[in-house]
Length: 446
Image (cartoon, rainbow, N blue to C red):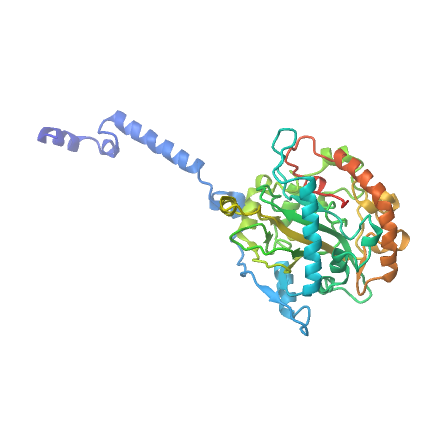
């Protein structure tokens, strides 16, 4: 720049000197336009939680204690004061050592046989009709293993799942955590065996609705989630829990946007079409798209335990949770080395007071499919007036109910047929991934 040109620039108006693309009025205009575009783009791509007013309204994230697995040993109290306090505060505790080795081995063998049998019928990775199978959260889901159609399996000595759900230390811990009184009963409301494979599809943060927990929203409960495989954190395949979500101030909004049991009509749905057309919310598994600010808060407060085979996670009925997919790199490494596909097995039992009311309306609840009068009864009343669809586990098991389980076995073949018809009717018409996971994942054992 010559001295004369330098003097001209110095004599220019101050605002022209702000131009980044030159020293003319046009250059200033272009610079300003570029700045505006940059700001707009920056705002558009700002996806930080702090940029979302709904997220900011939740306040700062609560402090979450690191995962701790309590160790049980013979001679110790089943539930310590520390465990009770932690459960009330967090809505979850994990306990190691509750099952005796012999019982755990029986359960390990029985569950491995279930997976092997399923693999023979439906080989992993097989194509269906020339198309890739629809994404599926679990490779297999057997529900319920304590209500078998084989009378011989309705016996504690022949069914390790029945022994674990009814007679082990697990229901005793559940009764303590629910603070059961001596004049009350605790019942196994539902159980399910699940095997998670390498499919990356999972159901997002949710609470179980009536397909997985057959009791109205007023009934409390504890879910006992038993790991049947080691699940190291770096490999995935485990269980995530949103600590404290059972008492979080935003929980009602989460219930509404997912259409949980809390939103069901008191008299239930009249038909499958009534449920599909009129159920509130965006679906059980869709919290991420329905309320992203709550999804973020759950992710911030999640706890994933590094569980070993035999560990039990006890969680409050209304604690939000989700499955953890296997790590993609871990899958690639196993395939490269020629190792078997990853599978993680778990057995889940839902415990509730005998005063729990069975939901009314149309659905797939097997006790109601057998006798519509069971709808609206308590679990205690169902056992007294019909059959022990929800077996008593506390303060003790009932020998009379154990004998009557064989009656249920005789009914199961007809109920399985009826269930399959209803399941097809309840399949969402406009939802290929099955957001109502209770309708698609529910599966009566065969």
